[in-house]
Length: 230
Image (cartoon, rainbow, N blue to C red; front, side, top):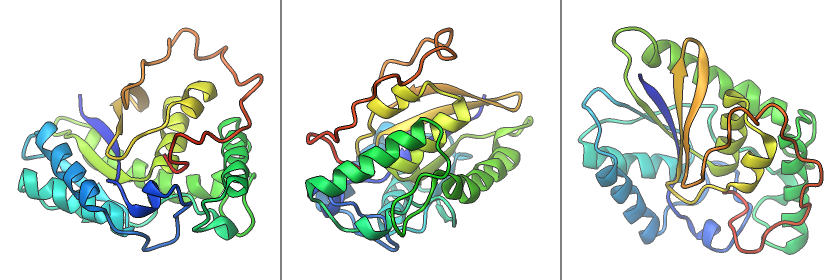
């Protein structure tokens, strides 16, 4: 069956410095980030019919350009699938900003659609712009006898929130499993439902336990060892 691959862009300087970088057009790839894009293309050889889409952010477009150069395939830039906007925390890398962002992300994963940072977006706002793109992709490419895989190059926090929503995942799983640059989430579109096939290198949750799992006592402290936008 055809699958949707939500691919995080390659590394940027903002990622290295752990800056909250969400405004458009945003940072460009580092040299290492460019190599990550090429490596992703080499490690994920696809059929000629695969579809390659990217967000309007520089880092996503550049990553898709590099993947497409390996595949000898054109990529399409679409609106609506850029990173969730952090508003007044934009371009900050201090501990307080990371804590504020992390606290809001926890609220989103716990189902608070209205939680938002000052001047930023809510989860509902992300859903309103991102999910119609996914619906359009599913209708065009993932259903029927001519179905084909779609690689959508987007952004870490947005991918985790959207994938968790589509696959109805346990919030704890989505919270703790960050995506590295060019890490991806793979979803299969099956009879109108989204079934999780992979989430980076994480061990997938037990589907029988997904309905009862919850975040009872989430760690409210941002992790210093990860890029907050992952």
